[in-house]
Length: 358
Image (cartoon, rainbow, N blue to C red; front, side, top):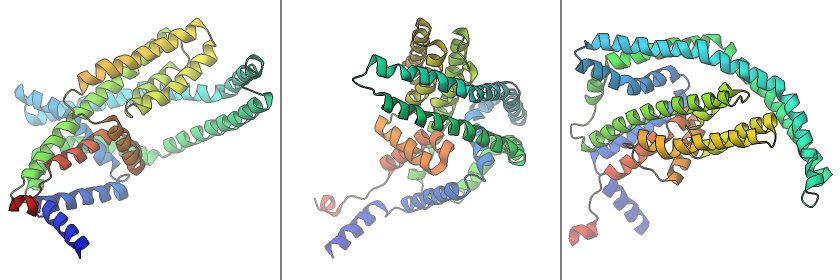
């Protein structure tokens, strides 16, 4: 009975408020919808994300006395222009370099064998010929399987023409209506909320600010880091500069872990192209400078208004939400972690009986 009393007291303390119950139900429903229908709703969710990103531009144009509908139309045209440039200019270049990389894998394997064969000669106390041969055989199979699976997966995605067309058509449409009718949608949503909603307003206001800041900052960070990396690698005449620039740019989506993981392909391409030389050292120094400037200059500048989270909390959020929703879970890991933090801090709690008695 004492255990039941403790549980009952805990529920009465934290769930006696109507808003708290509504918030729990709403978050649970949103979670279930994302888990079971996230893939189907991808165009709408993507349009919503870009609406958060671009609503500030619409608001600025309205301040400059541009009619709202015209402002929405201009922002929509800007979005379509950037999307068209991405599809026509950037993706074909990356696809070509990806094909070149897959075709060059046998040559890479030969170079790796040559490098590995020198290990028993240089460091016989650490590496035996049998051990190195086993490593090379396993690596050979892994690389061959990786190349085959990579091409098959990409071709399978590209072959889904209907799905891609629907995504690229519905996302701009969803963006347009989110920008155009955002006030009406918010008013309709507010009509079903409890009248007293201090908790909901506090959490909703903070999350709206945080998601907008995060999306804008993260997109700017991806573009800057990716372009600077591409231009630096192109200047240093590094093979697959566009592909590596894209990988480094996208890696900023995963704080801490992304920078470590993407170092492996950069170092591998540089080592196989330049060997143990000054050019390889220059490449790695330039890459480390880019990572250092990103982490110590760009991130603090772009995310100064985002709630600070402990690195362990960020990594845990990336792992959990990434496991639930894949790419989008990783992309929104920090805003979702911020949501959890905001709910935790704003959650209403009744004073315990001991405190009331005192």
